[in-house]
Image (cartoon, rainbow, N blue to C red):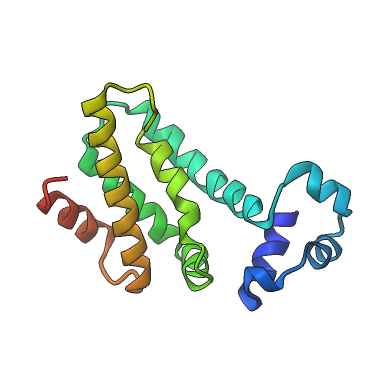
Length: 155
């Protein structure tokens, strides 16, 4: 599995220092197979992030009327539960890969009415910024504390 192999390599090397050839040899796959499934090394991580969020997101979508403060708490709990992976992303300066997942969670689409689109964008990018700073600070605050801090800002 390329994702597991890639994460193993990423623990000891920067993403720029991992070649596609090295990844393919380590994963036991051909380069053609890699490029059939991925456009870049970052695509492997995007797929892994989406896989991690899939179970969380499907449970959240079933409870569509959940207050946003609970969603925030659940997101930070998810990060805490997968702390090792997200710390690795932070150490390798790859947290930016979370942006698309957060925007997807906020259902940020260009066809939304203006006020709703801008409000959701404000919250989504605020959440992304808070997440990035939380990782940079070593995830010191608990998910509950992060939820409360977010609420205290009126978000």
